[in-house]
Image 1 (cartoon, rainbow, N blue to C red):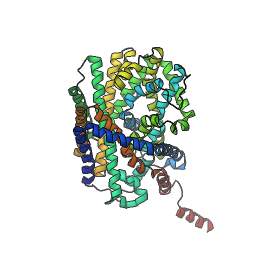
Image 2 (tube, one colour):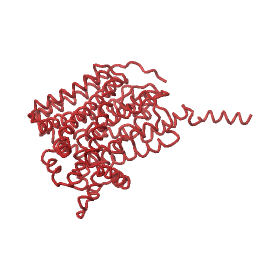
Image 3 (tube, rainbow, N blue to C red):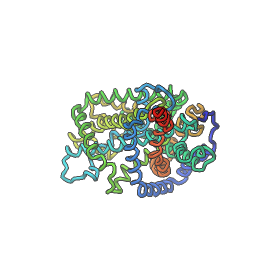
Image 4 (tube, rainbow, N blue to C red):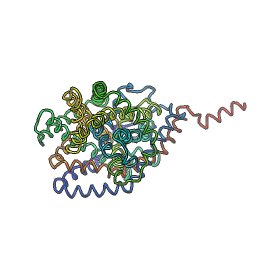
Length: 522
């Protein structure tokens, strides 16, 4: 096995990926309409020609992962460690803060209401009563933030990355996902390898800067709604600055200190907020809705995940989300690789593909279900603010309906800030890992990317909300090459598991079987 060395920074990947982000902002400053047109055309092309592939890719990733987890290979231990580095709560907390933080906080309030007002086409029925529309609406949200979404972030590709890095000693980069195909050549001066790293950085940067900008707008709206603070560009910039400061301190202190501390703190906040809403809100409605929507999703699992009839709706919802999550996937797999040393394949896949989605769905049921309950009792109480003010208005409208509404709204804003901070520090860490090839990148590199994301987000805010939306949509475009990168693990991860089973004596090797036969013969 190769010895992992202290690697130099990949300045080519650094310059190309960072330069692209600067050019995006520069062109947005020059002509936002032109950039928006480019992104829209590219977005529509990606959705049209890759939507079906993404749906099959995510489904295959989930199904193969589950089969692998509950096969005899599930006991294989990853990362060349006998015991996990992180305890269960700390580990699950950091996993939960990868996807949920990137948008699930505000989508949890808004998406169920969107689907309630306009029932998804698969279940659209003019005769459906408002009561009957609750479960399909909530279930559709579960699909978009559930099993397949989580599985693509850190299961099969994580197994490949951990094997290439910790077991074979190669750099921890997105290109390592292609190691089973190209071998050691992928880590040398490889155009394919460099392209894999560059598109992964650009995709995850686009998906990170978008939420930073949206958070500035959303928190600004919330402060204005609650305390009449002027909702101006200056306010939004101050909010983003505070967020970046938190993320910079966190990432500077490392994964084992700052990032895991913020993750645990945030999960504790969410559990507390969830418990309070469950107690003071429509308790039995929330419990019944979660169970029913979960059962409805499982009953219509393949039907909902492979639906292809309404292309316009798919582009706005399912395929958009799949492109967004695929853009995150290589970097999230790197992060999950770092925090999962010593875990078995079964533990990894169950945590990412089953536990995390169930927690995420329960969060959607509590927040979104509360909104659905009040909308059902008083039509327009939640849907009208959503139509007029978007996601920030929806959150405030739901919190306003609850007892102690002011304090609940403040709690939600705090959770939102910490959640997005965990996204920024995690992504900045993984970009630094990609550029330096080690899971202990230099501190300056980690902090640099936090600051860069913050500065570029502020510039996009100054240009206008349309620039942030354009960048957010661009992650779907970058998901095209990233999704090709994530195809090989569907067959290479099981092959690696088979090889590791021989190395860990879980499955006897051919040589050992022959030795036994010789001994028996003697």
